[in-house]
Length: 82
Image (cartoon, rainbow, N blue to C red; front, side, top):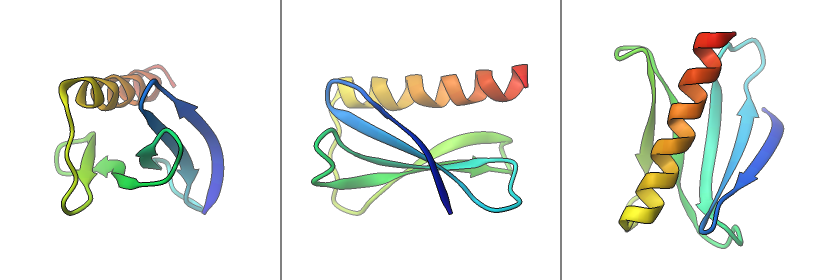
């Protein structure tokens, strides 16, 4: 898997990865300092959307969930315009 870019927000870090031959991305979601892996954003073909799958025993407040939602919305917008 090829690491393409990392985007950070006030609390989170999103690392976009490209799988060889795949059209969609896998995004690792971690704390901003990358000390804790929080989950992954990936394409869910049944819904034709990117979704967030949290790691076990993780907690999120409204600010973190807003960041995740905003990132997914950006991915979906990029997909529609490309």
